[in-house]
Image (cartoon, rainbow, N blue to C red; front, side, top):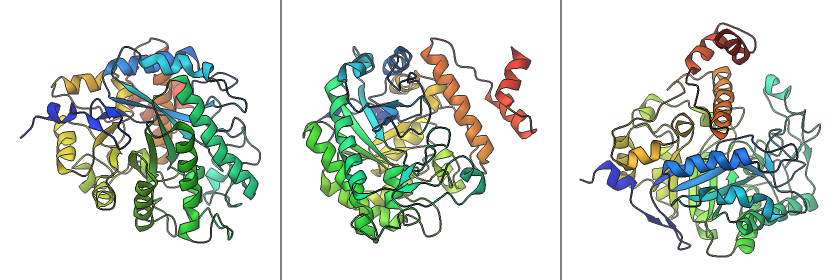
Amino acid sequence: MSEPRELLAEPLKLRCGAILPNRLAKAALSEQLGDRRNRPTAELAELYRTWSRGGAGTLITGNVMVDPTALGEPRNVAVPREPDATEFEPWARSADGTESRLWVQLNHPGRQSPRFLSRQPVAPSAVPFGDRGIRSVFATPRALTVDEIEAIIDRFGVAARTVVDAGFTGIQIHGAHGYLVSQFLSPLTNRRTDGWGGDALRRRRFLLEVVARVRAEVGDAVPIAVKLNSADFQRGGFSEEESLEVVRELGEAGIDLLEVSGGTYEKAAMMGSAKASTTSREAYFLDYAAKARQVTDVALMVTGGFTSPQGMADALRSGALDVIGLGRPLIVDPALPGRLLGGEDVRAQRTAPKTGVRLADSLLEIQWHTQQMHRVAAGKPVDRRLGAVRTLVRAGVADPLNAFRRVRG
C-alpha cells in the first residue's frame, strides 16, 4: 500500500492536458485584500507568494467579482468594466519560481450583496432571505432582465480572459454557497418562468452558458473548474439528485475539475458542521463525491474536514476524489502542504467544532481567519488565540475581537 506522501505527491493530468503537480489544493478563501477601487494589492500578492512556497500544487483565489458594481464584501477584487490585465499581473506572478498553479475563482454575489454595498441587489427572482436576521443585512433583490442575464454571462467571459491574459493558469466558476450561479440553480431563489427558470433544465442553463462563454474566451488548454453545492440543505431547494444531474451535464460541457461543497448563507454546511459519521472519515462531502464519480469522469476535489495524512490518503485511495482541498488550515499553517508532501505525520489544525456549529461561532471564525490572512500578507505571524475569542462571544461580549485585543494588547 502506498504511503500517504506518495499518493499526495502524485501529479494529476486534467482533461485539457494541464498537469497539477500534486493532489493538494488551497481552496478559495475570502481574502478581502483589494484596494478601495477593488484592484489587487501588493499584500494580496505577498499572501499568495507565501502559499505558493508552502507546496500546494494548486492555489485557488477567493472571490474575484465579475461586476465591480456587485460585490459580496467591501474589499473584494473585481474585474473593472474596462479591464486592464496588467493590474492583475503582480498577483499572477506571485507563484513564480514554484510549481504551484494559480487559478482565479470568478463570482457574482447576486442577492448576497449586503445593504451597505447594494441597496437593491439583483437575482434570478425577487426573493428575499427567509431568516429575519439575514434579511436585515441583505435587501430584497430585483429580478434580472433577460438582457442583464446575458450581460453577466459576458462579464464572466471578459473576466476570465483578463486574468488569463495576466498570467493566471486556470479558472474556477463559483456555483455554490448561495451566490448568483447557485441562486439560478435553486428552485427556492429561481422562480422564473422564462428560458432561465421554471424547471431543472432551465435553472441550470445559466451555469452551462457561463461555462461555455468562459471556454470560448480562454481556449481549450486552460483548465476550467466549477465549485458546486452537493445540495443547499433547505426543504424544497437544490437537491442532491438535481445536483448530480448538473454534475453529469458539466462533464459533458467539458469542465476539467469539479469542487464539491454545500450550503448557503441560510444553511451554512460549508462552515464546518457535519455528521459524526462524516467527520470520522474527515471529509465533509465524501459520500456525495462517490456518487458524483458514478456520473462523470471529471476530476473531483473535496474541501472541508481533512486533518490527517492518512485520512487524505484514504480518500484518494477510495477513488471518490482526485484532489484534497485545504482552506482555513493553510491560514494557520501556510507550510502545511510541503510538510505533508515531505512525509511528516502532521495534522491540519481544525479551527471549528466538529458538530453543532453555531452561526455566531462560524461568522466569528471567518472574521478571525480573514484577519489572520491579513497578518500573513503583512509578513506577521498568525495569532493562534481563537479559543479565547470564541469564549468571549459565547459570554455575550459585544465585538469580542476588539475586546480581546484591548485585554491582550
